[in-house]
Picture 1: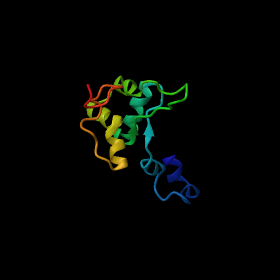
Picture 2: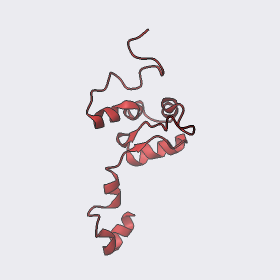
Picture 3: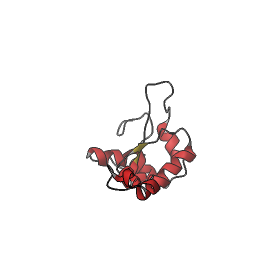
Picture 4: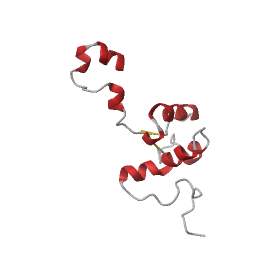
Length: 111
């Protein structure tokens, strides 16, 4: 896309920046159903642009999104961003402690 944008004037009539630069404003979810694809997504766009996702309640959704992200070959800091820190930043809310530290299905602070 960037090649066409640079080579053809008509490709630059609407986009003033390269397509890749414009796409850098987009955020992606983790519903790719393949950990290699998730790792590629993070390598291509950065962990700052990926958020955990689920298609719940649909039957073809991601049943264990935290486990899916946890099983990918990602740095712990990137995993924490994807599992909650990015969402907190985008929603401008305080992240509750360290993202990914709570056990699935259990509320924090309860026994």
